[in-house]
Image 1 (cartoon, one colour):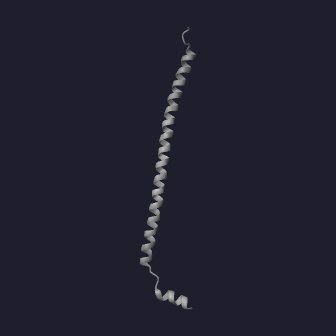
Image 2: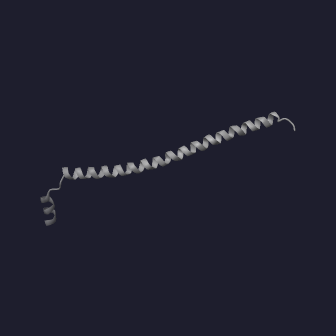
Length: 78
């Protein structure tokens, strides 16, 4: 058998580097997928919180600004 040539050694070194790069990219994609999943969970929680907060705001606003019964009665009597 003949000894590997410089071109063969360079090719093997580049394939090794490529394999390492692909491995790192695969891990990064996995982390990105995990972060996207967590983002979806957080966005759902924010939607729920915003809905509850809006409901509380409307309740407080209704208590602070109640409709006067006389005005409603007058508008229906007309």
